[in-house]
Image (cartoon, rainbow, N blue to C red; front, side):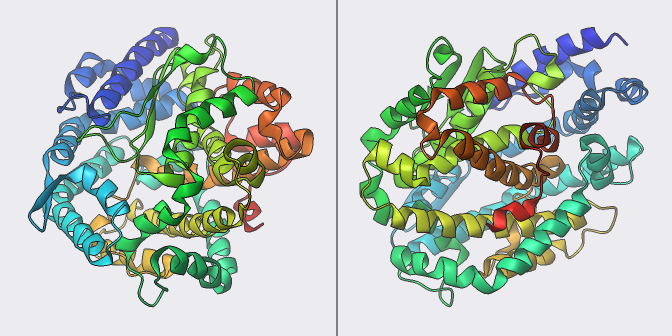
Amino acid sequence: MDVNDYRAEAEEFLSAIDREYYLHFAGLKDEYEIEPIYERHARLFSRETVDDLREGDNRVLLKFAAEGYVEQAVKELSAELARLEASLEVELDGETYPFRQAAVVQANEPDPARRRALDRARNELVEARLNPVLRAMFDRSRELVLQLGWPSVLAMTEELSGIDLGALAQQTESFLAATEASYEETVEPRLRAELELGFDELQRADLAYFFRAPSLDGLFPSEQLLPTYEATLAGLGLRNGDAERVILDAEPRPKKSPRAFCAPVRVPDEVYLVLTRIGGREDYETLMHESGHAEHFSHVDSALPIEHRWLGDNSVTEGFAFLFEHLAHDPAWLERRLRVDDPAPIVEHARASKLVFLRRYCAKLAYELELQSDGSVEGLDELYARRLSEAVHVEWPAATWLSDVDAFFYVAAYLRAWALETHLRRELRDRFGEVWFEDRRAGELLRELWKQGQREPAHELLRRLTGAELDFSALLD
C-alpha cells in the first residue's frame, strides 16, 4: 500500500465527513448523510488496509483505519441516531420542543419542577428511542474490534493511543479521594446562590441551570460576547491574515445541536466554530473553548502530513481549548475585557462548576473501563448511575449509560487535557505575567505550538515545553 496515496484519500474523507457533521449538527440540513461518504472511501477502512498498516510503524494512521473500520460498519446506525435526535420532540404542559433544543430550555428554566419534568421527558425518549440504537451500535462495535484481533475496545485504545488508561484511572481515583471531604463545602455555597438548593435537595436536572448561573448574567452581557472574543484574539496578535480561516456560526436554529463544536473541514484553511447560545457566562466559556480548537487547527502547518494536522492525540487540542475557556473566569481577563470590579463570585462559581465536571469525568473513566473491557455489560447501567451519583453527590439517571459515552475513550482526552491546560497556563503566566493574553509574545508561543498540530502527544509536548510530567494530580492545586 502506498502510504502517501492513503494520506491523500484520508484527507478527502475527513473533509467530507466533517463538512457533513457541520451541516447536520449546525441545523442546516435534516439528514446526516455519512453512508455515501464511507462507501466512496471504503478502502480506507478495509480489513486488508488495517492489516497492512499494522505491519508498519505509523500508529496514528493505524488508529484511524481501525477506528474507521468500526465506524463504517455502524454508519447506518449512526445516521439513524442523528436522524432521531433531529426529529424527536419533547412535550411539556402542552408545549413541544425539539429534543436537542429542550436541553437549552432546561438550562434556562428557573422553575425546578419544570426543569425536572423536562429532564424526565428527555430521559424517557433516550431510554425508549435512542438506547435501542445505541445498544446495537455498542454490540456491533465490540464484535468488530474482536474481528480485528483485539480482545476489547480498551485493549485496542491503549495499544493504538499509547495511553495507559489504567494508570490514568489511578490518578483520577486519587483525585476523587483527595477532593471528597471538601467537595460539598466548595460547591454548596454556589448551589445556594444560584438555585437556593443544597445537596440534600439537588437533582441532576438542576445542574444545567446551575452551570448556566443566571445570577452572573449582568457581568456577561450578550452584546459583548463576540466583541470580547475578537478583542481577546487581537490582544494575542492572532487576528490578521488567518482570520478568514475560522468561520463563526452563532446563528440560532431549532435543530442546531445544543453542544457547541469545532468542525475542521479543511486543516488549516476552513474551520467552523459552531455555538448555540444559552446565555451568560456559559456562552463566554463555550465560545472561548471552541475558539481554542479553531485557532489551533487554523494555525497548523499545511505542510505536515495528515496524521499530524488532523489526527493524533486529541488531548492536545482539548488542552488549548481549556486554556482559552479558563480566560472567562480569569480575574485579570475579567477586569481587562469585561470591566468586572469584583470577580470573586465568577471565580468561585467556576471553581465549583469545574470540580463537579472533574469528579464526573473521573467517574466516567472508571465506568468506561468496565464498559469497554471484555466482560458482560449486564447491570452496567446501574454501575454507571452509582459511580456518577457517588462522584457528584446527586442521584444520577441510568438512562444515559450509553448516550453519555464518547467513542474510543475520548473521556481520557478530556482528563489529560485538563492536566495539560493547568501546566500551559502556569507556563504562560511565568513567562508573560498575569495578563499574558494581552502579550503578543504569548501569541507567538502559541502559534509555534499550534504549527505542530498534534505531532506530539500531550505528555511529550509538555515535557519539551516545561520539562514537567503530565499528571492529573496537577489539578488538585
